[in-house]
Image (tube, rainbow, N blue to C red):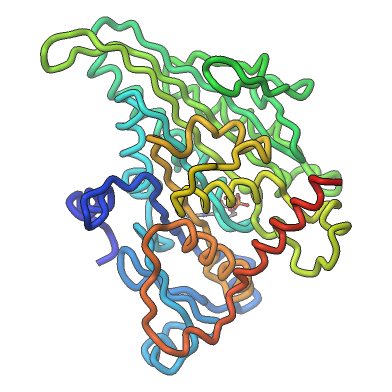
Length: 384
Ligand code: ADP
Ligand code: MG
């Protein structure tokens, strides 16, 4: 059984010892693309149940039945979505809870992580016919605020911005780069558009237009750069009655992030600090990994200051904030390396380690050291 019932979903929010879990990690496999089929690629992943996914370089449907003899690895996440999972299903399991927290005055963030073409933008933005997490979250917010608002005095403000090569830009009103400033509320992008939204219908149009303003690679003018991070900030402010009939004001913020492609976050062939200064490294993506690792390890110091992306997320990640990571992967064996990196990254973002099922699993050397190496090189770069 692949989908999750509400009770199972609720169980994810607490550890066995009853402590709240503030970072949940999910994986979503997209359908095999036409191009991938045409070149005869096979599927290298298999959703085992609603939480477990199996990765093997050699598996196809028949091989899977002889699983014991294959080299591969099981990963367990808070949920694993097969290619048939609907946008609504992904939204309900990963993000609906965060929307509820934001309505109660907390902050939260949702990330899509994965290689270019793995389905991040589809998951976050989606299409007119199949809107993604961003649009479904706003729809849900509108409905719930309408039900709960005490006096109709409510606002939902949207900001949509991009971090590209450590430059922050307003996607709703493109122009000069924005400067990040620290004020009483935290870190703000000076002059950023705050769009007052009234209905869900206009939001999709707004976001699609915003996406057209994302930076493109000079050689591929019609495609969004794989190095661009898009951040939608949804600021909610409304008043509701509590159980004792007191008027309570709720102010919360939800950040929804379509991250840059993970494939070039860390170039595997770099040997010197010099090569990393070039186009090989995405500082924001790496800094995000460092922050998540620090949070997962329970460190006191979280290195938010290391990049523009993490500065912008300072009030939405860590502390009492709730976060959801969605790792997007292609099923094709042609993307095996990227998929392996993505699953490994997602695995490290969890508190609970995957159970190891098969002794031969250890033979798949996973590139854990790559992150450490790149982190060191980043330090070197900073000092120069
Ligand atoms: P990314 O943003 O990670 O580079 P995209 O979201 O653009 O990747 O997805 C690449 C292609 O695959 C797009 O054509 C997209 O429509 C399609 N796609 C991705 N995920 C799904 C899905 N779950 N169902 C159907 N099509 C998908
Ligand atoms: Mg994309």
